[in-house]
Length: 279
Image 1 (tube, rainbow, N blue to C red):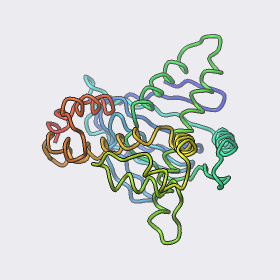
Image 2 (image 1 turned 135 degrees about the horizontal axis):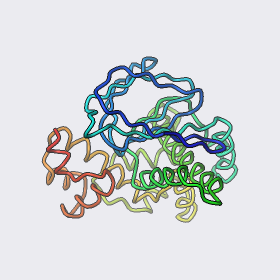
Image 3 (image 1 turned 135 degrees about the vertical axis):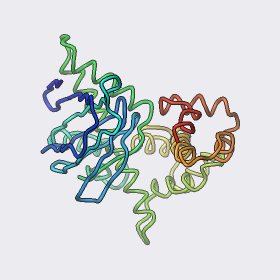
């Protein structure tokens, strides 16, 4: 079923049987979120083949084509996915608005790069997608206005993720470092440590107040929450690889296994035990 808005269209797809190489593409950006089950995505133009699971986002650039396998779909347990098609004009307007607010010397900090994006999304993005399903499907008086606000937030989260990836990539190239990119690189290299905010301010060459403002605007979260998200993403990968829960917990700087399990489930919708049992 599909629901249309002024700048976007939301569709929910249920698949009830095993299927292979089902084609999907759009002339606009397509933001997909898994709700239940499993897909395997094949993108020919970048030789990409990967499982697509709940609490993950998969973003196709305009015109990009993907072939999808549904290895676990059944009548009793269908595979369910939502797809939000977003107009290029809408993305451009959000980019311009964000760059206008951005006070970093680079006035073009945010820009959409038309490429595949696939990764774990955080609790806020999961809650946003669930809210958007309700907004698109209801018929209340202020529906269009509320959809517009949610769409702005979704595009902003996509742009923040892409900006992070571009900054990290530039940091790894000679003579291409940036203040915030250097901070992200430092956090990534010290996941298991309790990082002092003063250290990050020195790396960015900013005052404490300016650093917080710049970081939150660019990436949507505080540095501490950013580090926790990276820790949890790394924990997910290590658990999938078969490492023990307690080992992963302490290895990544969590001091309490109960706290680790609680925030892990809040983020991924499944406990660490569930991830280890599934592999």
